Amino acid sequence: MSSAVAAEAVEPPRPEPASRVVTITIAGDTGFSPNNAPVNPKGVRRHGRFQTWAQTTQGIAKHIDGDLNFLNVETVVTDRNGLTRDTKGQRGPFNFRTHPNGIRHLVERGFNLFSLANNHSMDYGVAGLRETLRHTEELKGVGLKAYSGIGTNREEASRPQVVSVKGSNIAYSAIGIVTNNLGRHRAGDNKPGQIAYRFDSDFDLVTRRLVETESAYRILSVHYGLEGRVRTDARQIKDWRGKAALDRGIDLVVGHHAHVPRGVEIAGKSVIFYGLGNFLHHGTANMSGKGICKDYGLFAKVHLLRGKNGRLATRAIEAVPLAQMHRRPVAMTGAKGRARIHALNYLGARLGARDGTAKGVRFTPQDNGTGLYCFAGAAKDPGKIGKLCRNWRPAPAIPGSLRGRIAKACSR
Image (cartoon, rainbow, N blue to C red; front, side):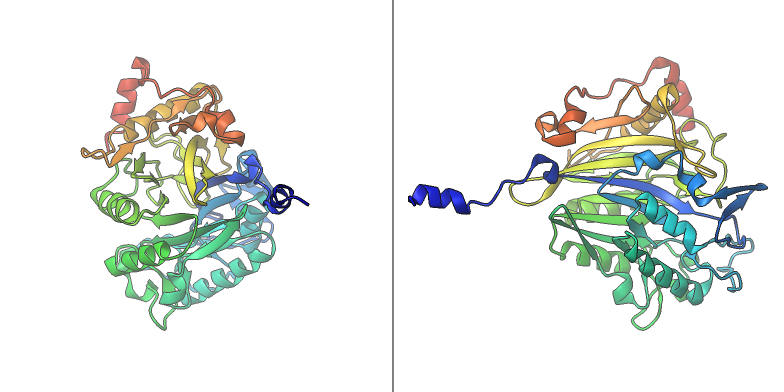
């Protein structure tokens, strides 16, 4: 056998183009059951109407098609109605709990990456947190890849999770606010709780541990934002753009909590969603009357490509506006969807840094009501990225018929 033939025989096979493309979908605040309502193993009741678990997601199921599908689980997960609620120092607290069958349904629909770090993780105290951990851990047997943000101690709550997707390791961490910065809700060295965003030492710990984790891509989930405000605030810019993205190079920062969408930004090589709004939450308000900048939720698809260096890089982003997030989410289509993409672009146009290190993302409205943004050269990428971006053009200006309406709705 010649040396040339021998060399060919041992050469490793080249990966198929499809195996180099990884898609991550991201969804915002999620939870079944209204305030302190009893849990039901069969489904959820709101405003006198009962829905099975399957009915709650049937309108959005086709979009849950990523290799990783993320959402923020903003509820205690328990089958116990006798847990004592924590009033969290509030006169009229909201306490959310969901039967494990509901969360299992979300996993069976395809969601496989959870944030548990939010201001409702401790709604039923340490007993509720332990219930959430137990039931969520069991879901790894039916498709859940990882969850993050709470634990039996500070080390566990801040520990990065690593999942393998098409041969690439993706590292993931979550952090979120705790109500009134309550010390009893914050994880300690020997105390169960949540890793708490408004404590600088916790944010530093989570981001440092995440970037020290060897991986091809890093995701940080942050539950924070002034409720009902669509404008990105100074703390987000300082922490998310400055520390997480530019200083530490975290590839994807996913924000939620404000219940309304906020703008999207590219900082360095990182992508930042400053707010996704609601996804499927029966404990939240009907947003349909809140105006064009606040009456929808944002579901997104982030498409990555593995390069020769083994790293995954973001190459295209799809934005899907949602309606009926308080009951049964569906994608907004046609002109209604495109109008919300223009509203999202209005917010994106107000992001970015003067020194050029960050720029707001403006999505090109599509005929089906979604928005699309493609990075330079993505039209030549393999697989679905190239197909998505082949005829892509930068976003047009906001139509005159929408400009005033959007500016008024997005003023704060």
